[in-house]
Amino acid sequence: MWHMQPQIFQHGFVVLFFLLSLPGKGADGQTPGYTLSVQSLVSVTSGLCVEIPCKFTFDTRTLSTNVTGIWHKKMTQDIVAASTDASIVSERTKGRFRLTGKLHEGDCSFSISNVQKGDQGKYEFRFEDGGHKYSYRWNMLYVIVTNLRGPTISPVGKLIAGKQITLTCQSLPASQGCKGNITWEGTINIQTTSNSEIMDRSGKVTSNSVIRFTPSQRDHKSSLTCTVTYSGVSTYSSISLNVEYAPRSPSILNCTSAGCLVEVIDGTSLSLLCSAESHPPANLSWAKKSHNNIIPLNSSSGRLDVSHVTIDNGGDYMCQATNTHGNSTALIRVVIISLKHHTINLNGLMFGGIFILLLAAVALLALLAVKYKKNKRSPPEPVEESKSLSPNNYEVVYFNINRKTSDDEPYMDVSSPNECKIPDEDLQYVTLDISKLKPKRSPEPEDTLYSEVKRN
Image: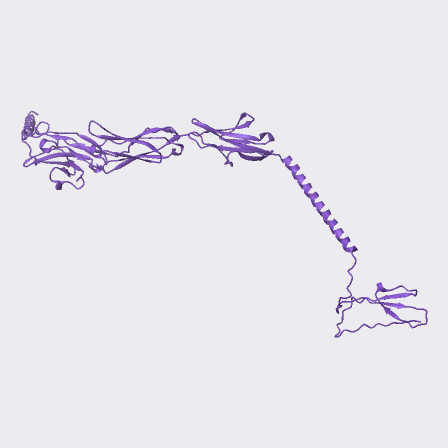
């Protein structure tokens, strides 16, 4: 036991002596006279830019104006920025990381533009001035990259139609080199716009844009967008306008014009349905106008039902829509049709029609009777003697046979009946009808022969 203690002490003394004998190192690991003043943690938004202030010290020697400053990323060892030789800079960060401080004066500040997710990590600074070189590995910078957020629109709440409102869009704080530019998009009628900037103590700039407009009913549920454009990247926020307004004129089902009319048969049911566009939703109710009075009726959600209609249900009905911003009404007239009255009218029309038909039939029969009698009484038309007889025309021939008591020879006279004179002797007439015989056409007309027969 006592033999081992000197060995432990001896080894501990050797280690302690070795640490204290390292050249240029202090108790904390830093070389005396070499310090780095930089934020240990910097948070930056993706797509934006950041300016990181940095100061460093070195020994009593001065640095030339040709000194080279180098920032490189730990783990990957990529050189992200160099003050003199850009060829050694990584392609991923070239043009985005830039040393901005005067190195010979001990300023190691640098900036990052269009920050990307891959930029997150630890960074170490180093300077080289001829043979004078040093890395500040005990004071490293840690960069955190956050997601880019959209701008803020305020206030977000209900709007009232016809009442002017003021809305503000605010960007994220950003360095002067990448401050935001704000624009608005939407269907509203923007009356005035004003833009401003506010710089905080760290030098970051916040952009603001204020608009004033008067919303209307048609702006309800419309979209309003605020867009902020930084250096190389844009972001936006949108809101849906919540515009409240009084009810529009109610609409009654199957009735689109003012003063509409609905006819209902007595004894059937009646149903009236009313709706109105409004925000917030309107309370719908029905009432009946009676002379100068308004009689409220029991209804539900704008629906009025009457199960058994009577004559008393006829009249003017009013639908009223009401919300916190106003009210509106619509009228409809209900006419009750009596079935009994219509039955009487139908019967009267039916009997009247039958009576008219009977009168027409009697008149027609009378007309036919008169015409028949007139035709019956009229004498036959006389036959003209000068008219030539065709072979198809026939004439009745009368033969007059005269009887005489004298001893003279008998004779026979042919004449028409109208020319016969009535003598004292007896006359006998014979009539021959040959109208039904078929005519025989003779090649040549023959004379009619007359003979007179006298009888003693």
